[in-house]
Amino acid sequence: MKSNLIIGVLVVAVISVIGVMAMQTLPRGKVISEAPANGLLATIYKSPSCGCCGQYAVYLEKKGYGVAIDGVADMQSVKEQFDVPYELESCHTMKIDGYVVEGHVPEEAVQKLLAERPDIKGIGMAGMPSGSPGMPGPKTSDFVIYEITHDGAKGDVFMTI
Image 1 (cartoon, rainbow, N blue to C red):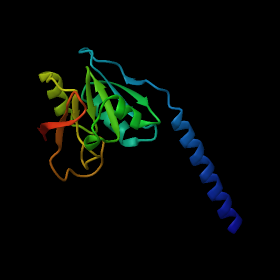
Image 2: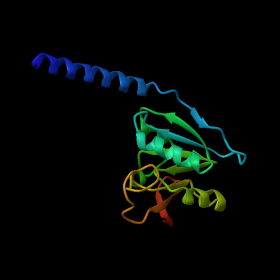
Image 3: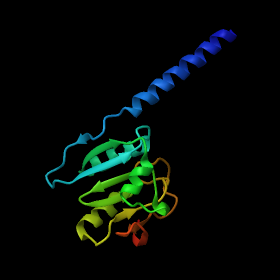
Image 4: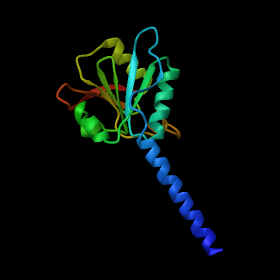
């Protein structure tokens, strides 16, 4: 009985390691939907093992955006490359039409950003708030989206949803 338990644990461990290794080799630049007629393609940089980021991509696709996923093992380097302020960091970073969008930002804010085209680097919402696009659970408070300034600082409130 005890040896069956040990064998079972070892099998689960081996399968887990193989699964993690497979996720780490996720092809970079996987396009899950082509750019729509408006030509907007959102590129989401995410850890290969992050499921909520994948759910955010599906959410954007349902809203009519073209979506490409770039699986990145070192997300901190992406944050540094796009000058995402530490105070606004989340689990994924998106580039769309020249702007950076950090985190589980609702599409209404992305739409406003692209329509108004303010002179900023982008927008971001820190953390992984419950009920935000791609995150399970009920919405427990307002979603506050901040500007990301050209020098990579947290700016003014861009929008509250």
